[in-house]
Image (tube, rainbow, N blue to C red; front, side, top):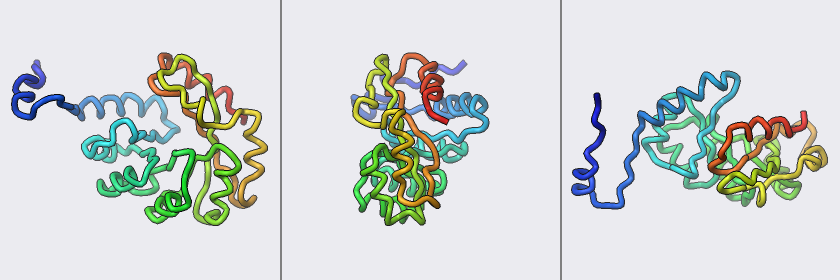
Length: 195
C-alpha cells in the first residue's frame, strides 16, 4: 500500500505554503467523467488551475480546454494542444483578444449579449459563437449568472441578431457556478435551455 508523499520532508525542502499536484487524481477524475458523457467533449476550464502538468495530462487523455485569456492560450499552445480542442469562454472580449485567439486557431467563442455578438461581424467567416445562458444557482459558492449570461427569454432575439445568417449561432452555453453542491443543477440547467 502506498504511503503517499512525506509532507514534512517536502516542506523542509521547498518551504511553505506548498502546492502539490497529483496527476493520478486528474487522470482518475477524467476517466470517471469520460464514459458518463460519451457523446460530449469534455473541456477543462484553465482558470482555477492553469498548470503545465495538468494541461499535459489532460492533453494526453484527449481532453479539451476552456480558455478565457491570452495567457491561457499561450499555456495550451506551449503544451502542444491543438486549437481545435479549445473554446474561448470569457463573455467579454476586446477585438485584439478575439484576433489573438483566431490567430492561434480557436474558432468557437462564447457571448452573452448582442453587443458582444456584434464584435464577431468582421470575423464571421472564421468564428462561431455559443450563447451563454444565465442560470441562477443560489447554492453555488460563486454564482456567475449574477454577472454573465442572457435570460432564457432573450436567447432567440439575441440569436437573430447574429452577424450573418450563414454563420448561425452554434449552440448554447451555461455556467451553473463554482463549487456547486448538487450535480442535479447541471441537469436542471440543460432542461432550461430552449431547443
